Length: 134
Ligand SMILES: [Zn+2]
Image 1 (tube, protein in one colour):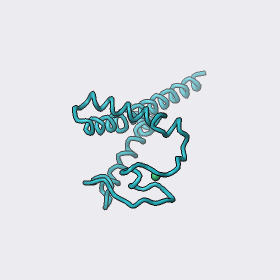
Image 2 (cartoon, protein in one colour):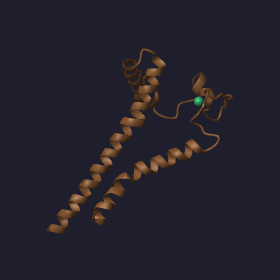
Image 3 (spheres, helix red, strand yellow):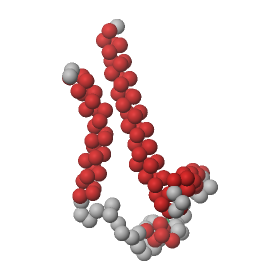
Image 4 (cartoon, protein in one colour):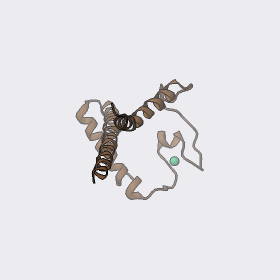
């Protein structure tokens, strides 16, 4: 295998390898945040959001604009989309919502960005070859 081809493959799969290493590192760290058996509880703090805000609703003044972070903005659109997708996946609303989150953010989004990464590398290699020929 030519050296350039090996370099291309290493570059193409480097993000996936890095992600796997980071994932394994987080999973094997103790205490790991990934194996929760219950939603954490925290007291309300006035200076910043805590798990209290997650569990009971956030009483803090919003920092992000409403078009982005409100229930009527992009955040709300994304949530309704995930719930709608989840409803198509499972009759249990919470399970479907969880599955939709996993499929969108752990499968589809990484696959899309990984695919675009590989396309960019292939196009870069093709342009490099064209420059050499001319
Ligand atoms: Zn808050």
